[in-house]
Amino acid sequence: MSGRSAGGRPSQRADARRNATRITEAARTTFASQGPEASLIEIARTAGVGSATLYRHFPTREALLAAVYQQQIEELAAGARTELTESASPWEALVTWLHAVAFHLATHRGLKGLLISRYEDQAELFTQCRRTLCEAATELLTAAQDCGAVRRDVDAYRMLKMVSAVVLANEQSGDDDEIDLLLGLVIDGLRRHDDPRSEAATP
Image 1 (cartoon, rainbow, N blue to C red):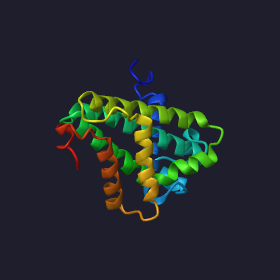
Image 2 (image 1 turned 30 degrees about the vertical axis):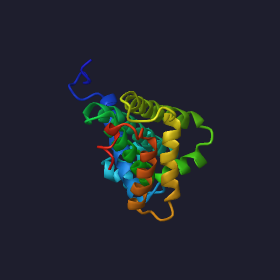
Image 3 (image 1 turned 135 degrees about the vertical axis):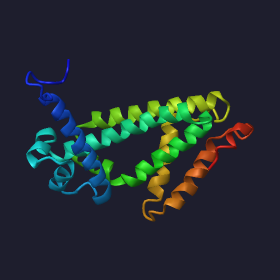
Image 4 (image 1 turned 30 degrees about the horizontal axis):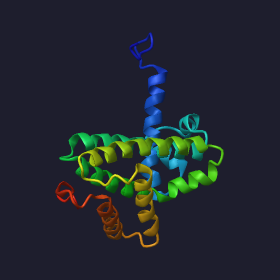
């Protein structure tokens, strides 16, 4: 299928996909800088579409917030697989990815809370996103455990819970250096200290 209509113009479906992508990307940037209550009109303008187009794809603010949140989670999961492929070791991949997760949580800490408060009937959204993130974390964690760098009595859920706790504990100060310090302590607790391979990648 060519993606073009009989007159040679791009199909409406392809245009719609591109518009949805542009809106989501614009929303992601705007929500990050202005918070989840940012103007939808400004988001449409940034995306280069009209307000009617935005509302056709995302009828409510909550629908747009959910799309942004889901996209972020999927990118974090994809990043885990990239790190595992490109990093020098599974331990280094795990460390780098956990810092990325912490940065995401710190940068978008208001987004999930707002979604939960407004999306009480959409528990499946959060269940699926949590599953996606845990699967990615498990892949990284298992690789690091198999090479002897990480202790075996840790699972992905508890590991992510600790990262979330670090960000939550630091929420009042908003000090990124403090997050890095606390996260470093958490990561140090994951290591098998009798295995020298885990030392080299410690930030």
